[in-house]
Structures are given as C-alpha cells and as structure tokens.
Length: 253
View 1 (cartoon, rainbow, N blue to C red):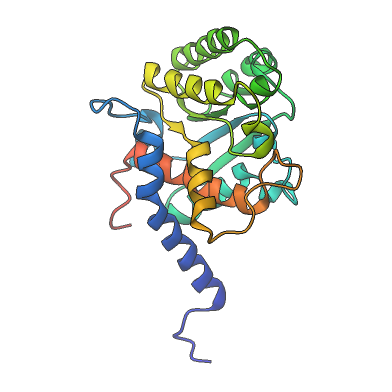
View 2: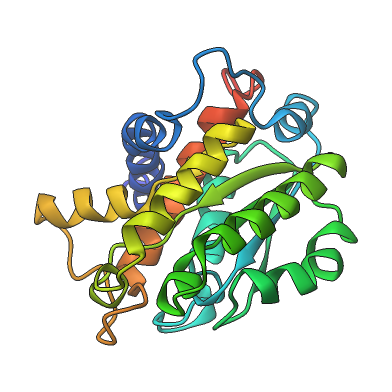
C-alpha cells in the first residue's frame, strides 16, 4: 500500500468532517430561523473561548433524550456524538468536553430541582437544555411549564452561561400527545423571547425522515431516538454551536 495514501481511519474522519460541514447550513437555518435578525454573539462565551484557543465545557441538560435512552450504549447518546463531532471539527483546539446531565423521566419541575447542582454550580461555558417532552406526555399545564422554564433561563443568563434550547422530538408517542404542538411552540417562543438558539428537533427529524436516506430515527418504543437519530442530532447540534459562536480562529488552522 502506498504510504502516501490516507488510511481507512483517516478517510472516515475526513468524510465525517465533510458531512458535518455539509449539514451546517441546513441545520443552522432550521435552528436559527426564529431569532431576531439583529441578534449577534448568540454564544458569546463559547465564541470567546474558541477565539482564544481555550477549552470549552458544555453541559447537556435534559431528560431521556439527553441521557440516551434508546441508544445501544452511552457512547451512542447525542452528547457523546456531539463531543466527537466538535473535537473532529475543532481538531486544532484544546479539548471540548460535553457532560451528560440527562435524567430519564424528568419534567420541568424535576429539572429545576437539580438545575443548581447539575448546571449552575459547575458553571459551564454552554448549556444545551432539552425540555418539554415529558411535560407534554404528562399533560402538565403549559403555563406552569413556561413559567418554570422562563425562571430557569433567567438563572442561567444571570450566571453568565450561554444557552441553547432543544424542543421535543418527532416520534409517534410524542406526536400523539394532545399538547405536543403547543409545547413545541412554547419552547420556540421562549427562544425568541430571550434571543436563545433553539434546536428545532421536530423539524430536523421530519426532514431526515422525508429524505428516505437514513434508517429509522426512532427506537422501537416509538418515543426515544435510535443510534442513527442520536448521531444525526449530535451533528446538528455541533453545526448550530459552530454557526452561532462564529469562531473567528477556525480558518487557516
């Protein structure tokens, strides 16, 4: 074998980086569409860390979609995929770490009870807050959900932590919930209200499913995402982070 030719591992890494770059524009368009045109510095702390070549610490906060229920292993959860995607793209950069703070079954009340311990005290550079699914399934009053989530967002803002919200998934058991559409809209409203990027997970999954080019995105339970779904979600979140942070030091490294 010609030693000058790239190895299989190098080719796979190159293809993965190309796929991430290729999905960046589409994912960013879906996720950032609802933000005001004048919004800038959406992820100011992450952008500053990247510009100075400093490590970036991220906490993925949420319920079973974050912990990785439905995946074949914790390494197939979306936070693990996200960490690998960011490290692959920012190969010149000091380590990017993504801590998984997902707890299966958590609704907004349970998340608020552990927000201080799991998020505020560690004080990461960025929090990705996945919320709304269990609340819709439990028929929690929407006004209560919005009030609690709004308080949590204000606490994160006061602490100087960058934030991205993630709406409920596109899955049969969620879609059948009477309040599914209302909860999805509520998360998007909160993002627009605070100028916070929102991962439009429902739209992303609907688009991936419509393309017909991917295996099943949802696990057999009809609720949680599959390995393929989590992998694509990790790529989309990485794309959003890189687009919203606008790291000026990426070029030429």
